[in-house]
Length: 277
Image (tube, rainbow, N blue to C red; front, side, top):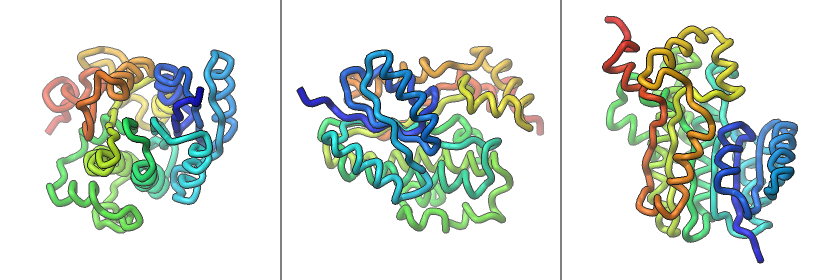
């Protein structure tokens, strides 16, 4: 029997947790810029009974995105997309964060949306960071949502003089992810498919450990200590949300962002994490 096909980008803990939760019995194409990461995650999954094939891909490159889509289509129509690829504020400079997390995600959602199977669904992973930046204007949000992908990085809001640091770049990218999902879900809907976004808070992954050990480590440790949950989250808890969004019980959910941060954003605005002044 022909298997349903799942495209997963970003060979990290969150992507793997989601793929393990909903990917059994499916053909999984697993893309990552670091092919060794993809090989390791694919090996772990295959030794647990899954069918995962590693593939080298660069989310910042439209050519690379089209290549992994073409490779995935060799297995059949793409029924599921899980996008967990990206870089964090401590891992890359401003330009790379915008090229990967903002532009690359927009291209991926656009291109997969052109070929997604009827009844298909996708989730992309953004971040709580998109919720804590200063409010953008309605026009700025509209531009992030609808500007043609090849023009996105030319927006005034994304020019070097308007981006303070890597954290601000990351916040802008994740805000764009959420707005892009709202706009792209309309196109996905024309094919009978759904698209949503998950915005995790601090989830214990290698990426998060880079942040804990980076220049903002104390800030992040303070954040989860003072959020209502009092702890960081796990990749499996993110997978719980993805399982809802990508299954039959989420059939009426599309174009939405689900914040899963242990209440850190609430605490930032209305509790002990609220900035002074």
